[in-house]
Image (cartoon, rainbow, N blue to C red; front, side):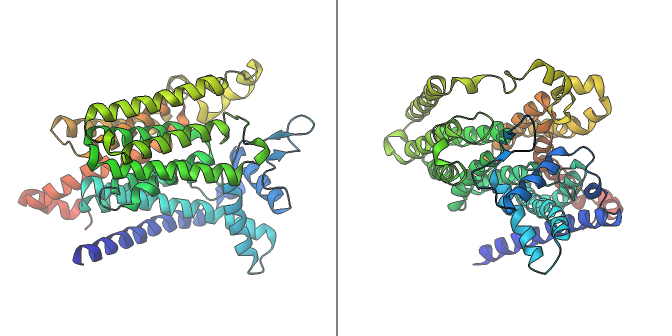
Length: 438
């Protein structure tokens, strides 16, 4: 009972501290006059999201994602998810229930949405840091993630694009995966969050693939010990993918493949991977040896490859392979989040430091842990995920929020280690009073 009470107290405390840093960030923005709400500063995605929400609240159909007033005559279909629209609409309706005018209700939603996602993202990062570095990593994680999310920009008031909730869902999936051995429902929740992040947008696909690969790797090398984790993750991933297809894609489009949004191809891959992993982990004959588990995973990967190559070969091309070359010159080459590390080194070297140094330091710290013999599952998982996020950020800077957020976890553990050393050292203890709180 004592351990359970301590665990409950711990997550409540983390939730409270995460709320404090989120409200502090909101207060700083308020003192500055909410400049990011009055001036979008080129954030066209948030502006278009507001248009999409307004159209939805005005009666545009749930499955109708056309933006009729943009582009050539007749508009075009957006690849965004209605899931974000309905959540933002809910916030607006809550504000309007108190008699506020529409413009004020929208302003409330534009401030509340990034604050809520800021709060929950910080919470899951702190929880993950505790699992990685012990309870001592909690306070450093609160401080570091509070600053990181603030300066990242995607949680600023007015930012109602999908990037903040995608980061939230990825960090929730990571936290639940690391909690899976101790809490049975955690694996199911991890798979569910991973699938939901794909439903919001395909930007998280590399991270979701890395999370799934970590689950498969744990199952491969640990067998029965990790079989419940693999089964739970697979069921959550496959089950939520079914719900996403049914509730966010029109029945008439269930057989249509759209490579940049959740559609038949994403559903097929998610369902086969999730159900296949759950099935392999639940069948005893696959758990008796590494070779049999490897055979099951290779067969599963082969089935997925055959399905994609035969049924959806168009989605194997580069994301912008069919884009008009003129659009590359006039538009894509000027989109900041689509820039690579090599482009940034030519155009904006100062931003390279902010985007890449923090995760690089975290990777070095993880490498030292592995070299020194730290063979815990949490170290392997965090190393694999941070490597993937860092690789994505090298390809496109849009991966930077994921790599920096994941980097907070080993950095917080490193700070906690030095705090503990200072506490044990008489000479350092005197300095500690001036350097660190707590």
